Image (cartoon, rainbow, N blue to C red; front, side, top):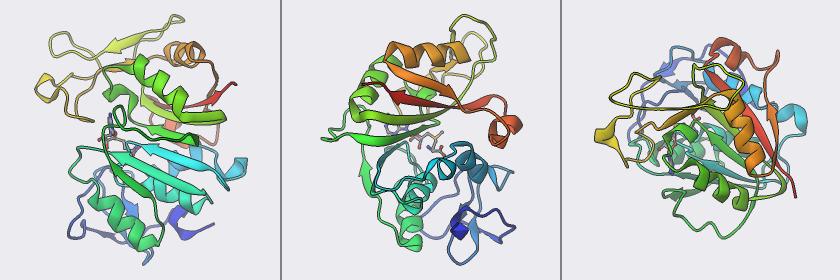
Length: 246
Ligand SMILES: C[S@@+](CC[C@H](N)C(=O)[O-])C[C@H]1O[C@@H](n2cnc3c(N)ncnc32)[C@H](O)[C@@H]1O
């Protein structure tokens, strides 16, 4: 296992020139980590572990698409887990693409970095694995996006989806829509509408995620259990695996 994935009490440094402090703290090959906003400095390791990728054979030979890649933590992790190629796409965040360029340079791995709204970009290929981590609730047009994701993923390919959940528990599928008028789990931020990745639109409950998967012919799995310390510690955040049925 590469030191990139190891939890350790590394010295935290401020974002180097040309980069910004993000939510996670990014590990560097010199053993230091770029300080992140989350108080949990092992957050991204817990999230990575919850995906179970190393336990399920790694990513050897897989073409990976990381949508909303931001600081590039998961893109770099995928390359280190043996991915044949990683395409990393993001758009408006000020940390983009400075952070991913810096960190992938430091680790000497080469993601294919694309600055675009993934909804309008022509990828011209399919991927075996798609990371869709922390993105779905930023999308106003979630159903159109699911159709797009189905086209982007190869047969038997998988989408890992991480999302904040609605606090409304029901056997029925519920999308809790963000609003600046009615109190919901998050404000919509209408002043930020159409700013990619800033505004919030909806938060699903678990049956809604399951329904979404089945609507677009994906096998559905909720990644819970003892290895998902991430969701145990942050129950409002869950991780799901959609496998494309041919
Ligand atoms: C909450 S962050 C999650 C970042 C990263 N995936 C992670 O889990 O740490 C959401 C990211 O998705 C990006 N994003 C949201 N909508 C997008 C879109 N339509 N096209 C490209 N990037 C998008 C945002 O810019 C932001 O960097």
